[in-house]
Amino acid sequence: MDINTLRAIVTVVTFVVFIGIVTWAWSRRNQAAFDEAAQLPFRQDD
Image (cartoon, rainbow, N blue to C red):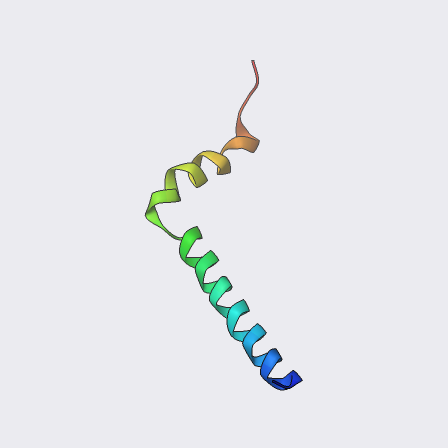
């Protein structure tokens, strides 16, 4: 295995991880948690 094969493997793995993160971020399962986190800066501590 030469360096170019290793670079190709790393590129493919990185792309797959990126797609996994995008899928996780846009999943409906996490929408409620993300909506709640988005409102944190606007909450008033009483």
